[in-house]
Each structure stands twice: as C-alpha cells, then as structure tokens.
Amino acid sequence: MKISRHCFLKIRSAMPALSLALVTVLALALGCTKKPTNTNEILVGEFGSFSGSEATFGQSTSEGVKLAFAEINKKGGINGKQLRLISLDNQGKPEEARAAVQRLITQDKVVAVLGEVASSRSLAAAPVAQQYQVPLITPSSTNPKVTEIGDYVFRVCFIDPFQGLVMAKFAALDLKKKRVAILRDVKSDYSTGLADVFATEFKKLGGEIVADESYQAGETDFKAQLTQLKGKKPDAIFVPGYYTEVGLIARQTRQLGMTAPLLGGDGWDSEKLSELGQDAIKGSYFSNHYTTESTEPIVTNFIKAYRDAYGGKTPDGLAALGYDAAGILIQAISRTTEITPKNIRDEIAKTVDYPGVTGKITINEKRDATKSAVVVQVDGKVNRFIKTIAP
Ligand code: PHE
Image (cartoon, rainbow, N blue to C red; front, side, top):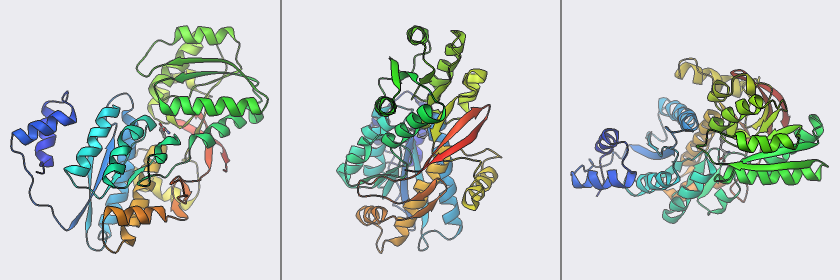
C-alpha cells in the first residue's frame, strides 16, 4: 500500500523526533493512503541532510537539483511529462539516509535517486538502491567505496585519491611545506580516506607527517588534540573534515598560538565555514569542485540563474554538483525509449562529455567521473581561486 506524501510529511513535522520507519508505520496505521499516481509525471527521489550540522550540504544540493528540474519542466518536461522531485531529510544520520532511500523506492516508486553528499551516508543508503535496481547518482560523495557498491550507483564528482593527491602536491610543491600534521574525523569514511591518501602522497613527495590526531563530528573542544600537534611544530595542518568542526578547529588552533595554515578538502565548502572560523580560517586552502570566479559562459549562466532563483545567493560547489547530477539524470531519462530504472541506469552509464558547470563529465567504467579539481583560498565569504589541477 502506498502512503500519501502529504500525510507523511504532516506526521513528520508534527513529530520530528520520530524515525522515518516509525513515521511510515504511523502513516499506515492512520490510513494515509495515496491517490493513484499521475502518469504524466516522472518521479525522482532525493535524500539529504536538510537539517543538522551539515545542513548547508543538503540545502545547497537540493537548490541545484530543483533549479535543473525547473528549467526542464519550463521547457515542457521530457516527452511531455513533468519531472517531480520528492526530497527527504535524513538529518545527517546514516540510518535515516538508508530509510529514506527505502521509502523513496518502495513507497514513492521513484525511477531514480539523487544523493547523498557525505560518503558515509551514501555508503549506508546506496546498497538499498542497488538491491532494488534503481539508479542512484551521488552528486558529491568522493570516497571510492561508494560506487563499488554496484552497477546502479554512480557519481558525477572526482574521487578522494585524486583530491588527496591534489592537496599533497599543493602543500609540497606550491606552499613548500615539509612538516604537515593531520587532524581527522575517525567516524567519517570521507575524512579517514582522504587523510590516508594525503599522507601517502605527501610522503612520496619527500614531506613528513609529524602527527596524526583524531576527533569525531559533534565534538566542540579540540584543544587536547591541537596541543599534541603544536608540540610537533607543523608548518601546515591538514583537516579533511566538514565545515562545522573545521570552523571551530581553526579558531582553537589560533587560540593556542599556532599560525600554520590549515589545509582541507571539499568538505569545507559552506558559507558557514567563515561564519564559524572567522579570521582564524582566513588564508587557509582547500580543494573543491568548481570556482565561482570562472568566466566560462556555462558557469556564469548557472550562477545568474541560481541567484535569480534564490534571492541573490551565490551557489557553492554542492549546488553546482546537484545541478550537474540532475542534468545528467535528465539527459539519461530523455534518451530512454521507455522510462524504466534499468533503461535510465544504462543511459547514465553512457554519459560522455556532458557539459557540466563543474566541468566536462564522462562516466567511466567504475561509474565515477574523471574531472579537474580547483584549489581555493578562504577569504571571508568568498573563496579565491588559486589554481586548477587536471587529473
Ligand atoms: N566529498 C564529501 C564526502 O564524500 C562531501 C562533500 C562534497 C562536502 C562537496 C562538501 C562539498 O563526504
């Protein structure tokens, strides 16, 4: 029996503490059943962290996805059918991410799923898409294990072995750093994977990893770990985490009197980073998927359309990747003769040279995208473009 989305959301907003599974049980008990599906619509699911300590990840991604959907729907949709997006909030929790994908596929009967941002949540949820053979595209999960889950799981971003190499080279060759300390989130697949690659590549380039300390997302006091690092006199600190912790870490680093720049990966990308890190994060560097300073028409058009749609807001890398993931999905659906999850999967796999705002996207045999990365420097609300590094 299908549950009405309207009813489901009503229960959810009345009782936000309930898990998705409990809301579903309650909805069934209350008899919230669904009207017959509108055959003039193509249903696509999306799951993300719309709340919690990584809320800007989910929100930005969703704004990018919605912009792409609005553009195609305005042009008449796909063969006269309008695309409808069903978005579910997983509050940044892996088990909720898994339940969301289960619900999107079994209750809402979506033909494809977009999400997640964080690798740990994609790793928790993508096996469900694989099990039901519904294609899933993660816009931004960079851990290699995500697409290894199976042939229904794709990504439109680069992977951490590349991103880690980019930052190791940047630290060793551009900044001429010799002694780097690492501070990693041990519970995050993204953070540990990226920290490992960085360490290996930095050592290959002749550098030394002088300390390797850890924390867990949700912590707010990093002084103990930072004091350990300080004793090793690093000339840079690599922090492959997400913006909420990174902002606090930056401030506490400076409070302890360390002046070495912080280095990081795409997980820093949020307007909240500089709000939390203030002056302490200024001047630090991270690798990212695109730069708003690009003069390519495809990028400037996207930025303009996004600003028009969202009250002048500048799109971050997540919004850009959400827009590209949706664009690739739309193109794949348009190429199918009959819209089925299997046919869509086959068409996504054939993506070659898709002109994305985050660069040209070709899906390779591992269902990953091979693309350039950019290095940017934090300067208040803006991230200054430093360089592009090709694969
Ligand atoms: N790459 C990160 C991960 O795999 C997610 C992320 C992508 C965060 C882009 C910010 C920007 O967990």
